[in-house]
Image (cartoon, rainbow, N blue to C red; front, side, top):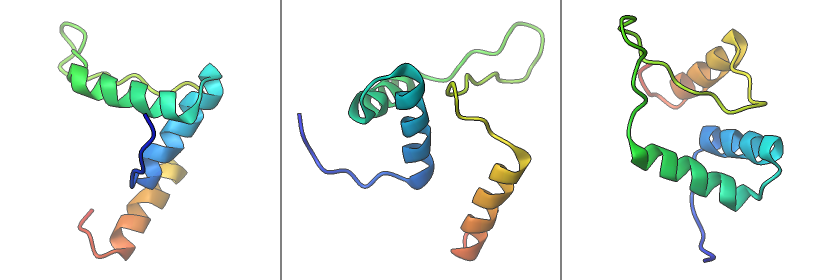
Amino acid sequence: MRTTLDIDPVVLSAARAKAKAERISLGRAVSNLALAGLAGPAVPPAGTGFPVMAGVEGHHVTDELVAEYRDDENADGDVA
């Protein structure tokens, strides 16, 4: 089904990376990410106490990327 969505830039970046890594359409990647979100949170391995999140293959999160997104939010007046 075709529709128009206002997608957060971070979500769009993750979806594009997923689509490229899995060689699927951007729409399919967005659908897969949305369905994964509906499935619920990841369960942490027993005994660690820390949640483990699966990343998107090919989309590497670096300290610099986190700082860039954090700085973008601060520029908009949001609290980090």
